[in-house]
Structure formats: C-alpha cells, structure tokens
Image 1 (tube, rainbow, N blue to C red):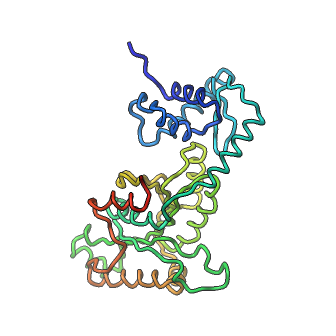
Image 2: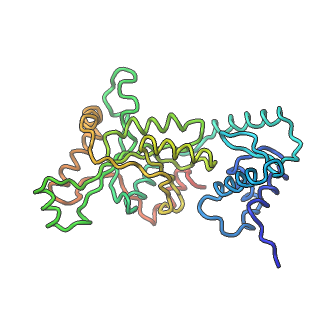
Image 3: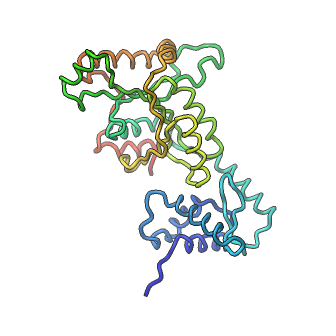
Length: 319
C-alpha cells in the first residue's frame, strides 16, 4: 500500500534541502520549483495557508518533540529543529529577506490592474457593478495633505435594472426606495506586513461615503498570522479584502466581506464630487442612468475573454 505524501513531508523535505528559515508561502514556491507540489495531489485554493496550518498544528500538538521550530511571527518563518542554524544566522537571513520583500519590483502599474477588477465585479453576483477609475491627478490641488487619502482608485455602482421588473422599479421610485449600491475600491499590487496598515487605513479613509469599501490586491501574504490580522482589521473597520486571480479572474476571492452601510455619507460624497471631475462625472452618470432606467453611460471598459490573456501579457502581469 502506497503511503500518502503529506504537507508535513513536503515541509520537511524543503526545509531540509534549503536549510533556511522559510514562510509557508516560500515553502510552497520552492515545492513548485522542485516539482514536489505535484506529489500532494489536491491542494485547494490556498496551499500556503494549509502549510501554515499544518506547521502550527504540529508544533502545538507535539511541543518540543515537533521537528519544526517557529523562529519569527511577522511574517511567520520556520526551520527544522535539527537544522543547526545559529540564532545570529537566523536574524541575518530574516533581515535580508525582509529587505528583498520591500524591494519587489513589478513591470506593471497599479492602474494596469483596474481592468481586472472591472471584469471581476461586473460578473460576480455579489457586485454586478460597473466601475470607473478616478484619476487623482485631475483633482483640485489643495494644501499638502488636505485631500490625501480622500479619493479611491475606483468607484462602482450596482443598478437593479436587470434584477427587478419595470413595475417593481417604478414602485420603488414612488416609495422613494433606492436599490442601487455604491462601492469604493483601493487597488494595490501586493499586501504584506510592511504595507498593510498604511494601505488598510487608506481604504478606510476614502470609502466612508460608499455602501461598501474594499481593499484589492493581486498578491496577499498567505501567512496564517497575516491573514488573521487582515481579518481582525476588516472586522473592526468594515473594509472588505479582495484577492485578484489574474489568469482565472472569476476565481478571484473575497477574503473578507465588507460591512454594508445602508446610509451613504453625503457630505463626503459631495466633497469628492467637488474635488474630482471624474467622481463628479460618475455621480452625474448614475443620475442619468437611473432617470432612463438603463445603463447608457460610459464606465470602465470590460475586456472581452478573447482579448483578456493578451492584455495580461502585454502589461507584464503574467509572462
């Protein structure tokens, strides 16, 4: 009978081969490079998170008898107990890795990710919305810091036209019931411990006007303690977290749900419209579309399935 190859076996093999402190995400990347990931079989959507959970459980259950040792928390990194790595060497390796993480370079710009989000939220049943990019450079120039973190990267609107009959929408109008939803999206290339708080509170600051606010990123640290931290922040401040899946955009994931606000912050919305011509046009477009009960305005273009892969390669989002 063939013995199943487990995540624990994979961790032991990778940490033994490289003999260096590694995070769950780093372990999984090396496993892919070395062809060991294929030995696991079904891994689910977040294999790095599974690795972290297995390591934490093994250390918790076996204590000093565990073959693993956790040597840092943020981010969490692990070594084999018998690795022979000295404490000073561990500190040096971690410091070097952290510097490399901060220097990660991408060929694409954050705005190159906007069409990915536009395509995702257009078809996702939670949103079914149209988005518009807000170009910050067009906004009124005020004193330094006066409108910092005021404008989201993208704004979105859900219209009920396709979900309700004309009779129902007419009744809503007569009862002054509004079923549209407004969304705010802050876009980042990557979320990790080095930028989480700044990015998160930027999203908090520029989404107070909307029914739901989201922080969106292409890459999010899979470390379980990091995921716990973003969940804690989301629970406390109501900001949702979306991880984009570029190749299969429909597999993008709402990691944390946003708190839905029934009441729109009209003062902040008015301030945004005053400062940003793009946001002002967005509000005007919504009014016109509601008047005719049809989406006639121009929002961000939705890339067709035929052109989508070519766009990713052109922008350097995938190779």
